[in-house]
Image 1 (cartoon, rainbow, N blue to C red):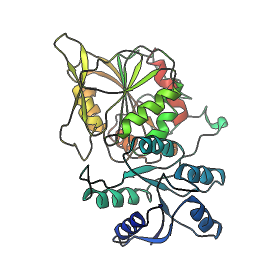
Image 2: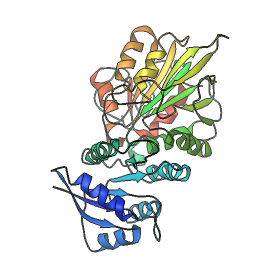
Image 3: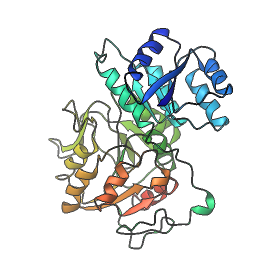
Length: 357
């Protein structure tokens, strides 16, 4: 039985979440706390938990301060943030993911009509905690080693490829669970200018991708934007796929390549979905494409890349297992024989830029 701690200043939400979690035979809410201070006291008493459900906005010690406490004390317990869609809350949720929370669930809102979805969402994301690994930075002395000893098409040594580097015309990053924190280790390392557009398809709902784009923009030399329908894809800019919508590339009436951002059906439970976006590149005028697949559950991006590999010159980078929070999406690529390089997270930005000059 997995022991769960719920931290929320609302007695109603503590009760609602407890009732939902306790419907699962593998999980049990053993304690609740009304703020971070009360939760710290429980930890000081020696209480042990396999998962913490954490609210952000609380008196005395808020969720961000509590996450900082866990980091300072090197307490490695998976944390799932349960957040509202208020503008400030979405920005703080992104910060919480940077501080180590592995994912977040949206609190129910009658205005969004998602009360019925909340129990299913909460249980699914809570169970994910028991499959994740605490990804740790690679030590400096390890950085010159091959990131993964399993064979790939173009094995690397410290990010040095074995064949001539081809400059790409378009770049894509696909990511899911653990992605926001991983993106923080990639996008801010890119220079102010580079030779192609870079699109990030991060699995996130409506409202949160704007905050993710804003946060990455603040941290980066290059410009980071959330995609809008009809927006032109420009070289040297980073675009975050809008949450709750499917993203495609299409040619407008001027012959320019622009983003199509539409409320299309979900694909495999995802919107945005990397497969949908990658498939839209099949008829785009880009012949040399770079795709990086970061941490995440499932196999999104694999199907789209299988199709692109048949028609285009595609170079695929997968994040290494030891630096992933969830080694799902990169593993699916490797299993399908699509990975050209497997790299530790710290190496990815440099190798990407070599192909984006």
